[in-house]
Image (cartoon, rainbow, N blue to C red; front, side):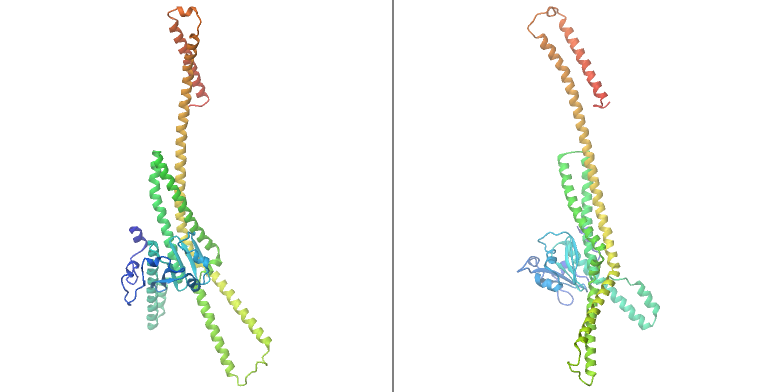
Length: 443
């Protein structure tokens, strides 16, 4: 587990917050990033109050306790979406794009992603803590990169050189929106967790199956049965994650719905545009010297202006939807990258299942071979029993109560044994030849 944690989480920068120590150590600003961390906060309190970990766009985190209805109003989500995140219920992996949030339920990672923050159900699970730490690290790294890029831009403006700006502008990475960075960390955590489970299953499976082929026993068969049950359950979970990513990639509308930052920016721009337009109209109205009576303004003109404003808003929403549909390439590439990862994990499990099926076929062949040998031995034993029964028939005939001259001859007993044995041997050889002729026994 320690090796996996070191592999998942690279060295943290000095600005990142350690989740396990933050609850006992105050930050530089004098406030704790996780306020009121305790074990009781992880359980259900009151009427639907739950403990959440909130991570904002700057990487700062804190513990908040919110009830279900407040969370519904805060993220504009229906109750059925919050029910997907309830740890008391077991739901398959799901990624839902809503108007103001993205609901993510990927294995242990259950969170709500908005344009400004990520809300994760508070848990002592190591994978949840790793997700929060990794998200903080990436957000902090991104903030440092943005500061570095802005400093370079200021320096280039001071020097008045465009080449300097172009050089550093080309070196700056193309950062994803906040919601996609959080979604990427969740996908990475889920894919890494499932891949580690598949790797552990492979390490345990192959030696067991090799031992089973060399020694068929009840204990090995029971272990193989348990292994196959775990494999089927893990394959179902991996298949569900793969299908969910594939379904998102196939639906452009769902991907366009997940651009929360873009939708928020457009809503703010439209709001400020309406405010400026209203201010402009008020200035025009004030600049008119002669006041216009409400009777003189025709109502048809007002209706026409209202219909035109509705048409403009609809046209703007349609254009925004079309532009969202056209600019989903970055999200599609992000989903495609993790689709390849989860598909590779599924291929591992499929190969392991095929190996188990081949082992079962080999064991069945071995059992059939042993069964055939037992049948052949039983056939020979039945033939020998038939030959021995001939002696019993002869003894029964000569044991009858009648007198013949052969009983008076002293050498008759030898001749009876010799003739009966020769006849029995000939009959046995005839049966064996018939079995080989009919290919009932190996030649």
